[in-house]
Length: 581
Image 1 (tube, rainbow, N blue to C red):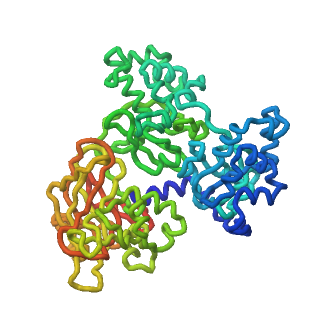
Image 2 (spheres, rainbow, N blue to C red):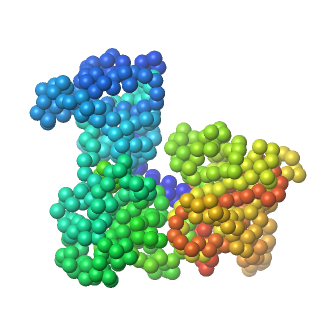
Image 3 (cartoon, rainbow, N blue to C red):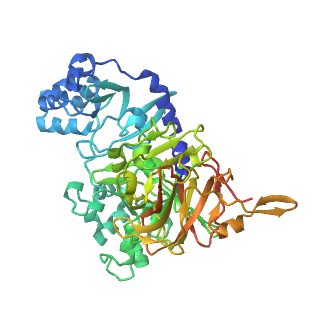
């Protein structure tokens, strides 16, 4: 979905991003590229003599003196001395070398990550210890600091060395030691929910380390448990009452039992912190084909708070200061209210083809400058795939670019295509969608019309769709052909003596305006109807069936339920919505 997500993230992270902006002038860049981490710590004993001892004791000094690309959250001397005191130890040598090696691995990531890439949530990469770290901003006494794992402040960020970046911190980081199941059980406020997990057999499934879990999709999980107070407010004072209400078979261990499904609905795939939850409008749960929707209202993360057919359905919030609890195999959030599986109707999804993780992480480029991907970079994109070769893929941004000036968020993805893969262009490109609720949708592709310098060129494409995780692609029913040089037809009618766009007539032949600017070059084309049998993520493929052209400017893809208004909402270039007049 296009940059409503960005607006939500800005609402959550505004203070955080202000901090990063302020720190741009304080980056430490003075060290020589020949000096790697180990030598840097030795060269700065006032801050890191204790850490140097740990590197020697753990036999990791030589490893961090070799070249590579790492990020080290480096505790200063005061932090390590405080840690030793807490453990009742006098010096570094009093702690076993293996324990220090795990200590280093928790503080180390295999990527150079500056603070400008931090978000209010988990970092993109796991530590070498195998757990995620979280970052956030906190204000104390009028001073805003970057917090890591809610345990340490960064006191000196972005120290550049030959093999990566060092962020000096004022407290050591402690790993999560409890699984998701154990984390919930350890909190006495979850006694009823814990008993339900055990009675259904889900406790065991939530108690497996990722390295020991044979189910790839369930290595990392997110759980939103309900406290005893929440359950009591809903009429369940004990587990027996919960079972009586929800168990339709009397055997909650059955995966088809309603109590089992009730608990499945509280479990999301992957480790999703609050910042991750608000980046998507819906999330798959372990309950088959059932999702939890999400959105941000001010600073509140709302779940299942939706409007269907003009009726508002009251949802619940995630209790912020009791959420984002890291476990060894996922994360735990707290629900503010009781919730159960809801029957869902299809709902509209608009998504920006530019908003894939690899581009979002490139903060020097995203929403700042145009960028041409190398073949290797294009091939590595997770949510965009090609028949190959992935040549000349371009992210185009900026008000100075005619192809993006009137587009959503002023950016487009330029995808060269050719029939049969001729001229070293891809034959097809496909995009992984956000979560789609099962149902029927009209599929629209928004693009900016441009013909390359040779006036005889064109690319005509046809759309097909397939469930994520499969290679099957089916052509959309009532499918239509999109040509990237065809503008909106410009059918007009007279209304109260004024000539206006006849939106009904244009929609009837598969065209519409989707942006504030209604010039013919910025247009959406109806590609056909997708009849989705199950809820999930899908791949939408655009395959060249005639011609060859480089300048195919793709902006946004819309899945709109067939009975919904196809015209509104529209968008301003900043991503804000234009509602129906």
